[in-house]
Length: 197
Image (cartoon, rainbow, N blue to C red; front, top):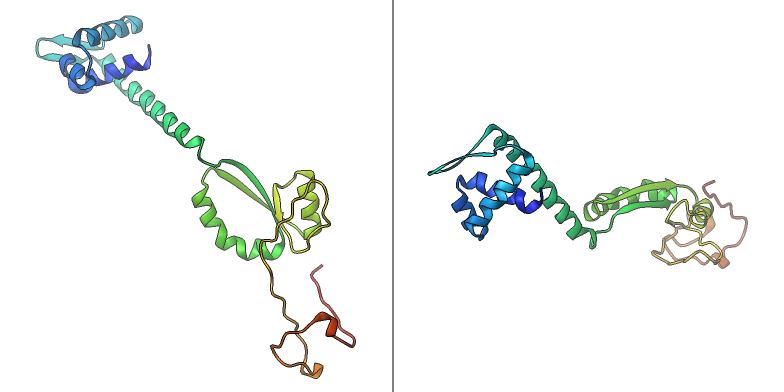
């Protein structure tokens, strides 16, 4: 049994006539009759009762039609998948993010990404810059977004994707003009710096 026979059977079943099915498929009626007889011989069962007014499916023909719908549906689904397979990005994607991005920006970006790339299975790992760099080098993640650029080395490609504005917060006693730019070199006196650890 092949797909040509399966399609021929479905056309005959749906048309209720070998002649009408032949016209629908744009093939000669005798050729379609031969395909049907060959199929019935292979299956060792009569699929239709024939009469001068057309064909009527037997109980086996009704069951076989259901199977054919599944088969042809699966074939069409596979055809559609393969048409898109060459153009569609798919597979796993392991991403490393620093905690501030994982908790903030990811929530606004992820829904759009999953809509655009439904066949990509994204896994997000969260750590600080040094650990993420090690994970990229070891292959644990495909790429990472970090705030502390690592020392350039083989196996790493660095690309600036954003600049993050930083703000100096100080008390009034510091004598600084509010909201005026400050150069780090110009800061004098004891300055306590708090960083996440």
